[in-house]
Image (cartoon, rainbow, N blue to C red; front, side, top):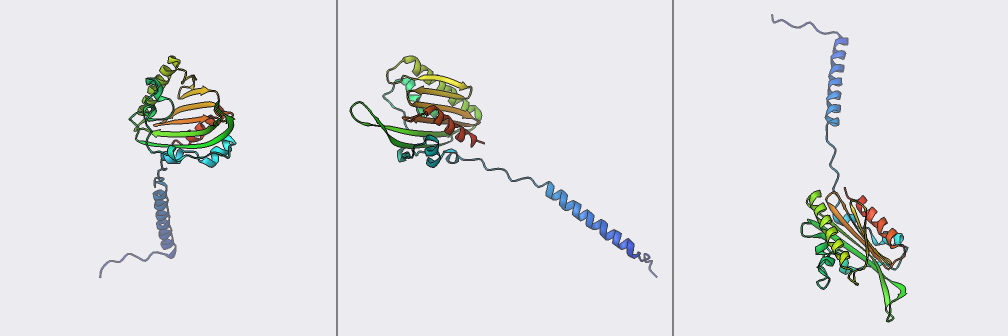
Length: 218
């Protein structure tokens, strides 16, 4: 006759089943806790642009409307008639250089109550441009190249490019004149340009929009 293990008592079976359940539960818990979280999506440059509705609110200017010619996915050409270093002023292919990998710009324009000599109504507006680069060093390189060009432009004292130039912090470049502010900032692998013209509190408006854009840079 073959040997048979004596039958276990009911308590032994329950203990064995309970231990098995605990092991399965622990294994499931460990498997769940070790599952990596899904990586967060890196925002594209389109996602960084501040909407016309938000800009109207910030600038207190309901007349601002999108300007289709400013809605671009590559920098526009610089003004060929401008003095060499001054061609970088604004946002164009010289401003952002050739090393960018992704680009988006937008502009919202309106008409002010002010009248230019000759009777023409003055235009006001807000522009934004965002360039993403392959890495942080490339973005910094473009920023420093821009800084050098704008400083050289300022040194020319050209009557068409009279502005004040300063750096509020190491990553920000600021150009100002009467009712005109243009800011540039680099963060991570991104360089941002924000310009405001013809609006009261242009500097405050530009800084608010610049902060909103750079807050969206991961």
